[in-house]
Length: 555
Picture 1 (cartoon, rainbow, N blue to C red):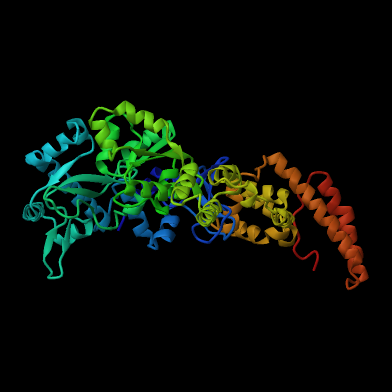
Picture 2 (cartoon, rainbow, N blue to C red):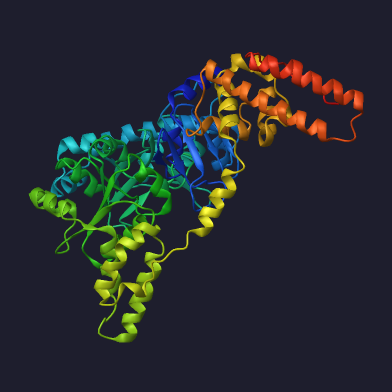
């Protein structure tokens, strides 16, 4: 079992914005952050994350909770597993009252092997010569923890010497089990590049063959710690630069990243042998940086850049594309002493959306009407993936590239339904009751006194919220919705008192009118209720008294 004090320490050390930012794209919205809800389909963000309260709430589907609950729901795991997942993400050492976890064991295995891989590099002249020829300085080797895996039998011997059970090594992604049941090392005869989580926890390895293996580069397999679709190589070292300079350079490989950093471009990262995907975007979004795609200028590089630029543009990222000329990659140019030329290329990056439009047009013969029409159709489809304002801004560029009128793309939008939706929604809400209830949520010492004067029918559409407040259900969706909405102000005690007095007077005057119009109430009862309201309750309210609600008064 996990020690409870250890759990509390973990909770206090992680930030919900950082945790959720590993899974979904968060954008700053005042004091909070917003995103499209990952739990129900939507195009307009209604999922809000509050850094100050360390909670999230979706105004669309009503889900809400803290960082641990989010990890549970997203990963489909239980509470202890979510705690261990968070601890592994943030390199946090949990304490156990008994036993341990797969996460902590895998972490230990990876750290033991990383130390051995680094030492093994010192004994491999071929690997050292390869790194030297690629221009990688010794300080970069040490900084990035580059290592070497010798013969597979030596890996197995080392695991045995360190008393690491082979099933644990499989769980960590170090070894695999063949169909015949025998175990073998995954990264035999390869230079290794340790891969870290954004918070700096070792989660896996990449390996470059030194034995002419047909697979030049391979990565650790998917494990509880390692998901290559959500990781970027070098991010843990690049993030300070990314946040401070508001720029991230995305390249294609481990060596490119190391050489970029070696030349002073500290914001460089790379995908792990995969194309850029939706799953990478939350991590790239952190810090709202400008994104520079720095890819090789060969056919494969152009194709990868086009796909990545399409993805980034349609998700509202700013940035550009650099394609390195003459078949060179960034590592080659830096190694040959052309760092200044690299800097010039980065500064002259082609903006993402114009790059996509130009690459689309390059596929077609625009002198051929049929091909021109096909290019137009593809451009129009791409532009439809952009936000309305961005789309309108780039229609003239698309039209210029094709040599057609902008009107062909169509830019008129009917926003009538949005206005009607806004009117419909706004009529359901009462800002004053929202402020009253939010104030009670955030000032629990006032709850008992104030609830004494309220009734369910007094608060209108907020009956469920009032009920949850009375029951102390702090994670009730309605409670979280009010708590996290920064547009709803909280009141000081005097403002709260005035607001309640106003609502009480309105309520009892309304009740007075309904009593007088109700023919089913006996005459003597009606007289009593009229006098009670007119001569007792209303005068007391006008004197500033919060009159307790008598539940049997209107029966």
